[in-house]
Image (cartoon, rainbow, N blue to C red; front, side, top):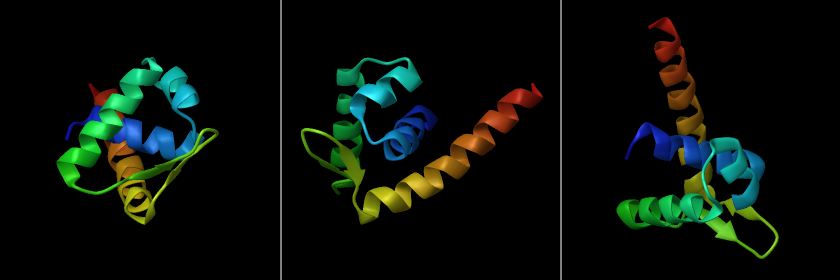
Length: 82
């Protein structure tokens, strides 16, 4: 798992849409979807419930999103130091 993967999780949880997450992250919608699927396979859990209109974190997804937000913020702060 990379910091960019955590950024995808946090953004997707915050905006609730593959399209909006892709726009925020500068990725394609399919790129966001593929990263999420890869993470779910890697972790062995479903992180988001998908419907035709929205994407919502599962309990595991919300727990990961909480941690991901903190780690992403820390990584961004460290990057700003350099």
